[in-house]
Length: 258
Image (cartoon, rainbow, N blue to C red; front, side):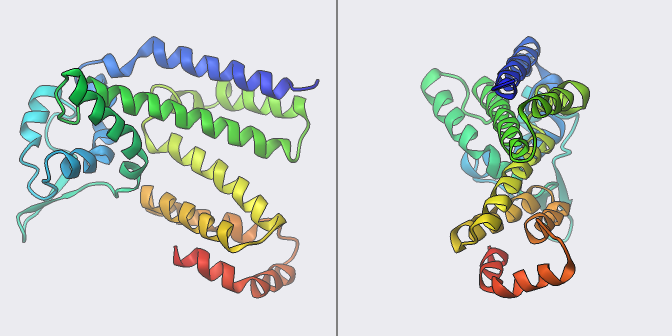
């Protein structure tokens, strides 16, 4: 059936919106809010650097913990005893992905009268809604990738199973601010770019792929394994793949340097 995958995509986006807004984590208090637990650890780079200018001592955190209760105690960082400074628990990749939403929230907080402290309502809303946007983009890229190889009906069925039959529904709605959602979208984009690079190898796309893989590894270091996707895509035999690498070694080097 023509365009059934597109109709299914929009139906599933409506489901994501309904679940997200029915729970409204940005309105929750304490440890049910968006910027809590692991998410607060990924995110902490942003207020620490851009609001407080304090990435080592974290002197602002006792007040944040008392006012917003993202965790029971300071669990987002470890104390380095030799230096007396704190080291954030997570790498900074997820904070980079949050940064556009954080900057919009910081501006909104300043003009709306909310505390510009990194954890008030505008920040909770921005990370929640921005993460939902990331989920929608990931689903859109996944559909586009599938349509390269399968028909409309098969793709529609795959999207339904993905969203309604796996834990994707949780990680794209109430858990959308976690790394799982962002990495799904980055993987979908990486597959898209890998396909396009193999269709038409070029330096610009090679550099883009290198940046994507680097960002994914910065979000979660074990995701460096994602480099195998563009490297091994379309592999028919070891010999032909090695010949391809030799032919395009300069482009592969450009990607690796990113």
